[in-house]
Length: 171
Image (cartoon, rainbow, N blue to C red; front, side, top):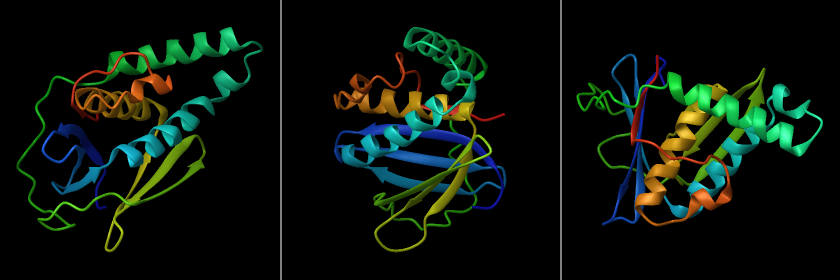
């Protein structure tokens, strides 16, 4: 992926019973994947583990204190997120092609507090993204909002309490 992420969008598409995940970059590329329910559950688990690895949370002495810090940080991240701007549909390039692949392989690792995520189809090229915890909170919210529209009940996993809109602008 060339350039940095500039926008994320996740939309539930009933005809596919999948979530369309789109990432725009600062160099006007757009990467698109279909997320299945199974894949979304795996992705949520990775996102949740990243959020919970925050030293501000792990150093708390009680489960209540950990939850309070986690909630505070999620609320702070959500107030700085831009969910109001429309998703830019005018990408100059679709590096993965016109056909939208189904996300099949998920790779990830932590690097200095950031989460590196690789999303790949069964065959062909995928993308690698580095996200911090603030983008993680927004991405989780987008995923849960899309899953909620499909009645997938992923919010019951307890990752984040309130899903929001279907796209976010990354500043």
